[in-house]
Length: 339
Ligand code: SAH
Image 1 (cartoon, protein in one colour):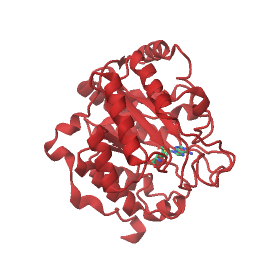
Image 2 (cartoon, protein in one colour):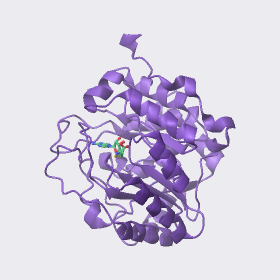
Image 3 (cartoon, helix red, strand yellow):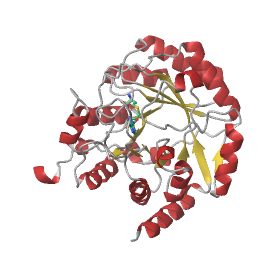
């Protein structure tokens, strides 16, 4: 199939399954403190020029209130990988989010690898979804990009999340530094075999003052191709159009809605903090203006889509028998040269 045939088929399938409504998730980047040194990341531990912050409980709840008033019923709390809050305190914040909103909202965490016990306690406190990309399914490339970490432990953590009962999202970084020619296929294969409930796949975008600053960004066309193939393989998955797309082409995030994506994630982080959560260059500020919900609505209309305000947007894949758990696929898939 040609690329345009592929994206058209993916869009058709997406419309069949979800109609023209797009699920909305408000993201709150609550801390940029990080103990990891991922080569490509603008908030890696070794980036000395980053002004570090952690939003306090009141600041987090106030960002949630603003999002709630705009019609958001699904919140993503993202941070670096550091225990900036003791588990108990973090649990209290999650409970407070639910209490403050009153009606049902979804709480998604994107805080990286933690132990199973911690995942369980956060789940019991009301975190019902978790996003964590495996970044690359090539163990060598993984190790090069993530000093001191392994693909195996990342995948193990993803399976633990699924077993606990989280609605689980994962994905990879297209054009991750040191990527090998077969990796795109390997990444797709690994992602699809995991049967995630949600998917977040994005392009690598260089971040200044990182060891990856001189690597080329992941090509936009390849991201669209990935979205289309993922939609065709997992018709009911919640597939996010990620923020980094706006750094590659104008309106990149809206364009991806025409290639199979059905989720859009406005940024709710207050401007002072948002400026300091720079994972990569030219990070979109599209949602930084007070009238962003209206702009979002208008822009989506131009792409024949509409935001689904006041909806939690649970992944239809949660209804699959066993929630899609397939434990035997746990080991990292071998790369071609290792087979
Ligand atoms: N600490 C959490 C959240 C990480 S930030 C975790 O480990 O899951 C969320 C995502 O941003 C990462 O998974 C990574 O894929 C992406 N990211 C980081 N640096 C990037 C860059 N330079 N370009 C594009 N995406 C990047």
